Every structure is written in structure tokens, then in C-alpha cells.
Image (cartoon, rainbow, N blue to C red; front, side, top):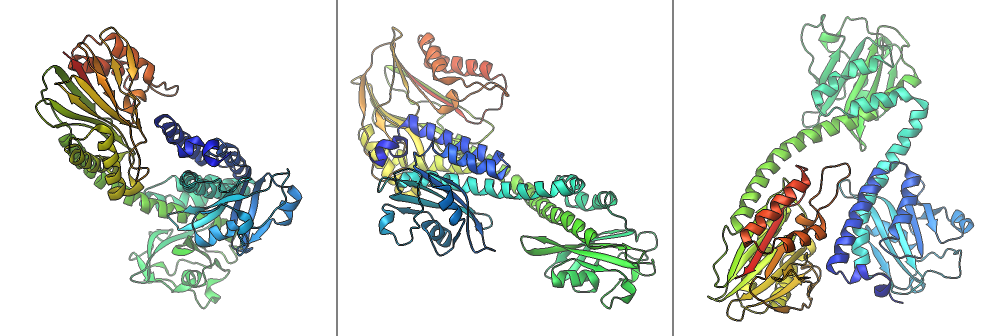
Length: 603
């Protein structure tokens, strides 16, 4: 059996399977991110991945640059004793190591012909013949935290479809592993110093920089005795420390010492040597330095800890006491723990401030994109004799890629389209605008729907690549012959309801647009009779849901029942009825997708 037969959902992306796969990938991503126990996460990955790809062998390695290799965290299908013998795989051996070095997915059709392959004894009679290795990369830091490999006992088993799915999951899994690793380390520290973790939680929950730094004094009071506190952040262009907190120096100061030279004093030594400095008697320390406003307050000992984030010093935390020998190595380690959390919190606070500013800009862009989207949605349908046509787009709070449009071809022929660009936000809205422009351009040629979508798919793939995926239905309405010829590219199947109440879902077509550059499509012609209704819609109707926590989707069955029972209504009245019923069903729950409907009623 070949890969296509084992995994039809990966290769033959029909509308239903594509949506199912997308939902499953989304579920897995959310589930992985939510698991903070490292071992539980890794075992869960191995178990759930089989729901997407039917593999025979599975491995997950974590990168350990100190030990110079990939550390084996889990192996499925191999003899444990052989795995233990290769617990650490050097960076210059194995296909997994090659994926780490190259920073990209490697798909090997026959491992017996690949010199990089490292054979490991398996538990059964089957042995690996094909392998795919995917680096788990943190895009933001450009850092690879691990490598995932799956293998099959069949040659050339894994396809580009598998690669795409694994790459999507890998980016989420990398973040999940990073989160789990950090949590694992923090959990070990929790057993030793529970109070420090409580402080860490408090620090990292504060997103306002001034509030965060002002909160340090009461937090430190809970774990250490001191008289004076300094928190300074580095001003790199000026090579100075900017002192944001100077606790304990207040009433006796004559002026505020807001800045000092970066390398001055014991704090400067902490920056220079990138490690904690403890001075048991500052009066005997040749590096000790005080600004004039800090002098003559009786300081005798000091501990200074650099604030590091991703190996970069961003500031210094320092405590002073009026007693000699007030601080020891335990205090140093304690402050290092707090400093780690403080560094993260400072970076988070800065990022949050940037995020707030970006959100303001994004809100402006979304409003502009919403205006673009609305300007491209026809307010009224063109008149065509013998038919009544109506449409509506009910926007959700999130900006999405829904659209519909009409392309008049003659007095008696008109192209009708409804589509949904993947994604949300400005990108989806801009993708909708680009897609609509291409589709209108192609549709004006007047060809049949199958050819229109074939040509549009080639244009979309050529101009936009795989950055944009689009489901849609294109139909050609002919008033003279009273026919509707349609082609469905992975979209929710429209309903053809007769005057007697019989209905049929219109599924003929092909894949969603933008997946492959060359894709064939089929069309079907319907003979229309008086009283017939053609009901087009997007997935926002299907996924409209009741309020949480036990949210229930509106679903296709309710849509069918609603349209059939109200088939006698005018086109616009039918749309009003559907929108009203969905509004009652959702009861004000926030909806993530637009509701788009288009109705053709035969007169």
C-alpha cells in the first residue's frame, strides 16, 4: 500500500477532509501548548500525531549544545536497550542531526541509500525504509530546540503533504517544548524555594514597567534583609545605567542620581564580568563607587546581580546593607532567581508596551481593511429576468475573508461567486481583495465555471503562492436556458431546494484554490424550475455557536431544515429568516467568522 492509500486526507484534500485536517491540526496545536509537563507533552505528541500521519516509528530529540548532540527523549518502535546505547546522537551523525544542522525538513525516500542514516534495532520485524526529519524551530529566536522524526517501513512513503502538516505542527510544538522545558526547570526550583516562585509569578504578571519596578521593594522584603535597593536599566547608546529605583536613599538625598557610567562601581563589575558580585565590606573594595547623593548613608556591604535576558545584559539589581557580611552565596543565588524573572518581566513589559502601540496601529489597519472589504461587497444584486437574487454579509468582530460578487456577462447571463479566504484579520481581508480581483478578471472571459476556477487557481498560485488558500463556488446563471452551471472548489456545498421541498447539496468541483498550481475541476449544470431555491453560504453559518462553556455549533442540519421549511419566501426574506434564527441560536455569543449568504429564487 502506498502513502496515498494510507493517508488520503494528506494527499486528496477534499473539502470535508481538508476542513477536518485543519481542525485537527488546530486542536493539536492548542493541546500541545496547554501541556506544561515535558514528559507528558512528548508522550502526547507521539500518540496524537498518529491521528494525522500513520507512521511506524517515531522519535523526538532535544538539542543539548553543552553535550554536543541530540538527546533522545522518546522512541516508538525501537528496542529500549539500543536506544539507551545511543542516548546522545552527535550533531554530525543521523538524518535528524542533518535536519538540525540545515535548519530545514529532510524527507528521505530510502534510508538504506543515505549515508547519514543511523540504524537502530527495532522491536518488530519491520525496519525503517523512509524517514522524514523536522527541526523544531523557535522562529522568533531563530533557535532549534529539538528534532522530530517519523519513519515508515515502506520506501518513498512521505509526501510533500506530510511535510506541510509536520512543518505546521513543528512550529507550535517548538513553542510548546520551550514552554514545557522552562516550566520543568521552574518546577524543580519550586521544590527548593516555593516563595521565590510566588514572587516570580507576581513579577511576571505585571506588564507596566514602572509598576513592575516599583513593586520590587515589597517583594524583596519578603525574602531578604537590606537597607538600600537599586534597579538600573542599561542605556546602550550612552553606555550608562539609568536608575529607575533608588529605594532607601530618599530623604537624605540632595539630588536624584538618575544615571551613572555603565562600568562604575560594583554594579559595573557585575556588568563587566556578567555574574553576581558580593562585597562583604565595601569600604575595602577598590571598585566601590557611590554617586554624591548616595554617600554618607552608612553602607557597608553590597550584592549586585546582572539582569540577563537571552544572554544579553539589560540592567542590574543591587542591594546594600549597613552591616558588613550581610550577603552570602545563598542570597546571591536567591537574587539570581528573582533577577531571572525580573529580566523576563522587564522584556515582557517592554514588549507589551510595543504590543499596545501595535494594537492601536492594527486597529486602524483593520478599520481600513474592513472598509475595503465592505466596498467590494455589492450592495444590491444585478437584475436578471426570471430570477430574484439577494445576498448578505454579517461581519463578526474578527475580520475575515468572506466575499461574494456578481459578474454580468450579458443581459441573460451572469457569473455568481461566493468564497472564503483562509485566516483572519487584515491578511485575510487583503487576500480577499486580491482573490476577488483575480476571479473577476478571469470570469469576464465568459468560460464555464470549471475552466474559470482552473485558470483562477493557476493565477492565485502563481501570484500569491501557498500564502493564500481559498474555498469558493462559481456559478453561471443563464436566464435564457433557465440553467445554473456551477463548480465547487472545496467550499460549503450550496443547497438546491425544489418547490416540493426536495433538496440536494451541490458538491461537484475539486480542491480549494491555491494548493497546487495545476488542478482540474468539474462542473455540473442544473435545470431550474419555478420555485427552486439555490442557497449559497460560508462556514460562518455552520460554525455559529451557542455561548461557552458547552458551545454547540449551528451545523449543516439546521441550515438545511431552515432553508427547506422557508423555501416559499422571497430571496431577501429567506436571508432575514436565517440570520434571525442564527442570532437567536447564538444568544449574543462572540462569533469568530462572518456570516455570508446568497440566495437565488426562480420566479
